[in-house]
Image 1 (cartoon, rainbow, N blue to C red):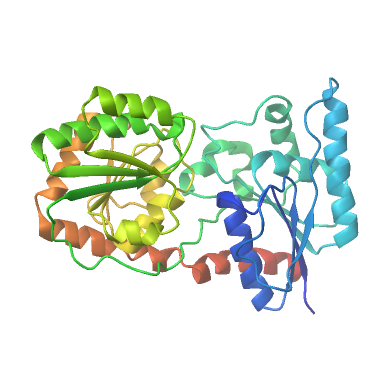
Image 2 (cartoon, rainbow, N blue to C red; image 1 turned 60 degrees about the horizontal axis):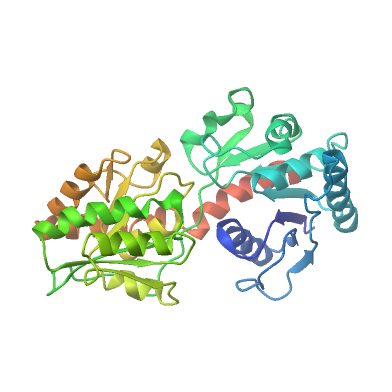
Length: 362
């Protein structure tokens, strides 16, 4: 008999929304009944198969002077949805939503709850009231999923509940075949223009590279609040003809396949989807090791390179080393493509399926 899986997430867009849509599609194919509750809808569903039910609610905004009133409204919304759907299992994504779901059903143990952290929970903490409520709320969760093995350390007393569920990596439409360098050496990254991505440090590292390789260029795809500051830095370093900020692109895989090396200088990441997309195309990558969990994705010297966080000189030297050896670039790039198999939709879905079956068979 089909089982009903109720997913809670903030929106269709973003990393969590993308994963929820992929999982809902997969379990719909397997004959289960996925239902997606969107609690902060601001974009349209774009990857969801027909026949999958969605419920959209706008959660209460924190405008009340009484924080408990604000919390109660959110918990009431969750309870209303759960009562309407009557699921066999609940899967919640993102820390504050997870806290709301667990607290709303804290004394109702009938329905199993799986909560999923989608960032680095060791470094990134919830704000305000939710920082204090999350440790209590997660006691109600039956399973806590994290994206990397390293993240299991974020709540040592609940480590026994934790399971690693990496993001699925979709097979790209195009892949990189040639590793010969053209007239222009092309570096690329895809990132929101925000402080956490540390794109200023990427530009500074590129400046060191450009001094040795004058025919190099860097293209940063993305948009965000740091655009003006980055433009000023580019002008200050006289890199106007070598560093480009074209905004977002709808042809990300084509842009990646037409580049030579992918760069990432983030201060923090969870499971970096853009990095994985670059690797899936077959692009060699150089990234700051912003947390040890990245080693689950990048095996240094085998399918990419991780360098010490904020070490611009090491970052530049590693990149130049890659450029100097075509055989190395090709080996690294071809190995990087294997990430599509390691984190395939099928393999990631198996992890989730095993979690669901544990509860369905009880």
